[in-house]
Length: 99
Image (cartoon, helix red, strand yellow):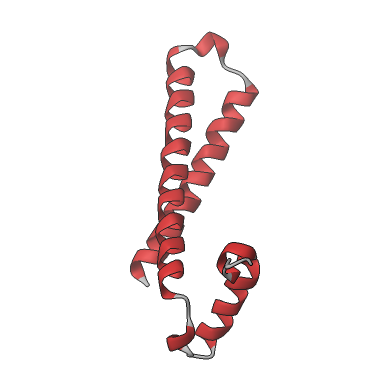
């Protein structure tokens, strides 16, 4: 006999169920522990992504600065894309912090 919860069995269904409960203000019925765990995980994931994108951006900026003979359109594209992604991640963090 399986004792898996909806959270373990079907994450999307669990998510939609809890979204509906939150919107209906049925707070006593939401899965508080798993929601808290997911929010913590999301925060860690966003932080990791920001660190990775900054590392890639800095590496390409250093290459661009110190290896001008090897500059290529792909480096330029990577620098532009990483700057865009970093700004987007920072805007997400800013919105979360100010709300």
